[in-house]
Image (cartoon, rainbow over all chains, first blue to last red; front, side, top):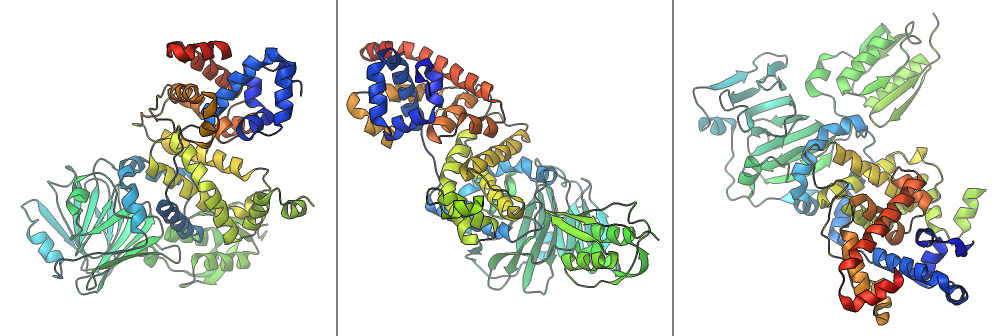
Length: 368
Length: 204
């Protein structure tokens, strides 16, 4: 290395020089060099000061509690191979990330389980809720049919209400500062994104807050549990007795227990305990999936794949031309998605690969 | 062969960890996390001073890493790989946020330099403590990217090549950034107290 031609930048970028300044390595070499070439001393000294200043800049690192909480969150995601990591999907969650910035400590410390001190154990029912919410502009949809009922809300959000379910909202208030609906029973929500107007689902003792995402709420009047299952995006969940309830109801942030895709939360109504867990299998869109039959008799492969895609909300990538002549006979019931794909691929003599939330099927075709 | 030498080479414990992690060893993975979370957080936090966002990005980064471990190759530097990925992730998150105004080319962050670090204590006897402190204050006022280069080089000790790759620039542009920041820092010395002026006159 010809250090004689070095200027300040060159010294700054030289690893041996950095090792000397920061750790005193090869000290005799550098001392000697300075003596031999005093004309270099000024530049070396300048570089040295810059390095010392730069390496002593403020350092910020998380404390042990935060590190551990982060590690737990990572572990929760680690074995959840289906979680969507495609950049395109991430857009869903971006806007509120900033809004939710303040949540940080609360979210980290809460961890996986949260005990709630409940003042009284009075059950809250749908009837209680709407009794003081009711106005002349209040509408209620009741699904007394056997099939799920599709409800389109004024903001473009859609709700698939399961049989015997009830959903109500105030048409005048809805879409004002916030979007609020009341639910009894089970429903699958697909909420139009609007971070400026949070969407609230009031279901018995539980309040679910989202900015735009899809999820299922199960809140039956006589059941001991209330469940919230997240299909995409994130939702914040809290109870009516939450000490910070008022703040959570009035701001635009997602805080408290925030659920990521394929997580679910269960509220034990008598123990008044919220617990969060991973949904074991990629959740089927509760209602949509029930409408599909998975019994196929000599059916076109493309049609089968299409149905699976729709039922699970996953992308399946395959060569349509190659599979054009392929037919499938399969009886698929409650196997996990991966098993269904495996069975289909066995029938097609094809290979498959699951990459993030995408399934890629490679086939030689059927050539019939 | 390369892998074998890495495993048996005590000089490169990270290489061994990386190899173990890629074969699905969760203990190795946690060690990689625990070893790097501090410096990653520090780097991320100085890109965007938002603890929550940085935490999310780091969590996503490691979760992605685990899920894609089969597809990962041998890496010469785990630290470099993680820094590069974190930066990409953070910038993706930031660029999606239209209303985000805190970070821009001429961002002046008002962080107070940490003056009692090892390096500064180390040389305090030469009465350079004050010089360095002044220089650090000037550094904190540099445009974000110039400060980022300084951190990556002197704090995290990445090579020119690595910095270029992390910041997705060519090496010459990184050099230019360094040159520009040195020039700016030099200007900032004009205003220092007389007592120190002599010293700086000598050095610069």
